[in-house]
Image (cartoon, rainbow, N blue to C red; front, side, top):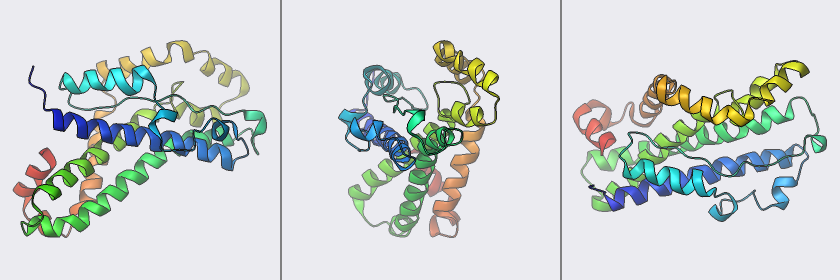
Amino acid sequence: MNIDIPEVLIAYFCLLFSLCFHEAAHATMAHWRGDDSARLLGRMSLNPLAHIDPIGTVVFPLIMMTAHVPFLFGWAKPVPFNPRNLKNIRHDPALIGLAGPVSNIILAVICALVLRVLAYPVAAGLGGGVIVVLLKILFGLVGINLVLAIFNMIPIPPLDGHHVLAFNLSMENKAKLARMAPMGMILVMILVWQFDIISLPMSYAFSGVITLAFWGTPLWDNPEQLVHLIRG
């Protein structure tokens, strides 16, 4: 099997950083809303050791990368919070749930703005190998953060989207939703792998971020060079 070690390392770095950013955002929002459970466990941190799940952060992503799966995602240890400590027990869980995906979108937009700055030296043929590596990292961060945001907004427990869905449900229906948790990831995998539910929103989101990054720059008027950069 042909494995490009530098590509795998870059992809894994992008995933690990994005997962840590995502989980730290959950922990920070929980702290802002009155619960310090995650902060006391060291989860308001970008330190990977605070967030790593052996399967979701190590084994599963590395299998996907070495098997040349066309997209990459994983998961970290869930951030705990105690609803009794929250300022508003009804809507604060939804805010905590949204914090992770929103943080990934923010990170993707920041990367797009950096790409916009780099578009001018790239179009002029400046920068050499350093620019190439930086572009790979930025494109990797954009793609992975968009996948994490969209994937985690699926409204099935234990994913973040179920907290948002629960905000609009009665107590009885919240209980029914919670009972899905033991089989939740199996259902999610069926929806993702068999029904391909994230490809369409992912294509629109990626197109939007690429437009933000390059519209109006010299690269926008050179689509062949732009496509070459995106595909690496």
